[in-house]
Image 1 (cartoon, each protein chain N blue to C red):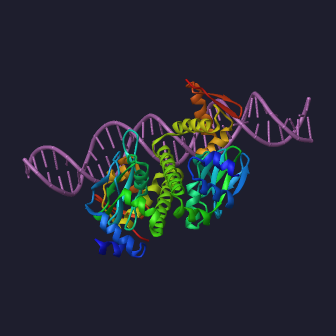
Image 2 (image 1 turned 45 degrees about the vertical axis):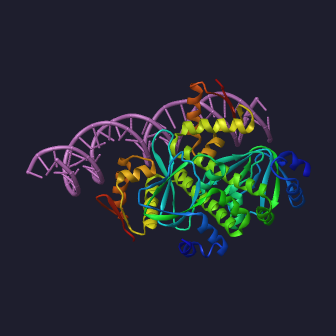
Image 3 (image 1 turned 90 degrees about the vertical axis):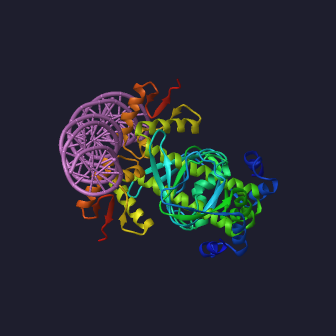
Length: 210
Length: 210
DNA sequence: TTTACTGTGTAACTTTTGATACCGACTAAA
DNA sequence: TTTAGTCGGTATCAAAAGTTACACAGTAAA
């Protein structure tokens, strides 16, 4: 595992910290669609993402969800840290967007290292800051943009995360992520196709780069 | 200043830290309506709120704003910390909701103390967590609630922050905070009055507790 | 090949929100 | 007491989004 860590975090953490991480952590692999964290789960480990992508969702009071943001290689989940330190239940759901690997760090260690390693402290703070920024972007989307813009941004995000201009999702799945109905998504996708921005296929959407 | 600090933060920070804060920080008082931080400002100080309340706003791309959350005694602004550490411009505007006092801590010190004082570290992390939670609530409001619910929650928040069931705002001011138009607010307020939840007066709204 | 299911397109209608316009009441300064 | 400005109520219309219903094509299992 130490090699995997060095490869991904070698330029951020010092040797000693990498060794400590390798000693106390476990490696976990996951497949697309796996629910890594669910609403109300108690968090005992802090995840460091080595490969793959994860999407973070917020739950509606009654029913339905909303996509908050994606995590990629090198990211960790600040919402999870929040739960670790606060000893509270998870406020979010984490679903694997692709297959990948995470390093699971025990909560106690993560706190210990905060006092011990400056690089760890910086990393944790940067993660918080990145997450705050993503949340701000989510708020911008919700407050200032119409559904058609939100949808197009979503498609761009998806393409970037999956490194492919073919988005393999049904309209229904997209509707869940954007917290709206399938009919609305179909309508707006058709409009985007008429504008020449995308091409629609069955269960997949092709981004047209102009 | 040391006395003020002890009064508000004595049970959180150890004596030595309180003394350090008192040595390097400056006290700033502000009046209702003062703009404490504006979009694009460079942040050189981290504010600790001693008294009063501050509202944090997000800017629209073209025009208009959106209320994110309020800060109260004992709070600090995590968005500001984010800017401090990232050396970037402010993403938010901070406007005094009431008169009050803040302690301004130089950025360099706040970083130094992170390694030095466990209580400081805990405080800073708790602030981040609280802010993340407030952002989540803002997202919940935007994504899952209609304007009438958002408006009523806003009134409840206002009442709590100002410790009064009389909200001294014009419909136009409320419209700015909720990023909608004055007409919509007037319409929904009238509906709330008809439901018996509030009473409308000129430039003020009275909450009716049932 | 029949059958059942999934995914998409579309029409018709409702609700929510936003935009414009105008009026009357109140307020404060001239 | 004029007068100008602020504040709120309301009517009308338009746009955005949500709801319901149904048709049809592709897919996969029986």
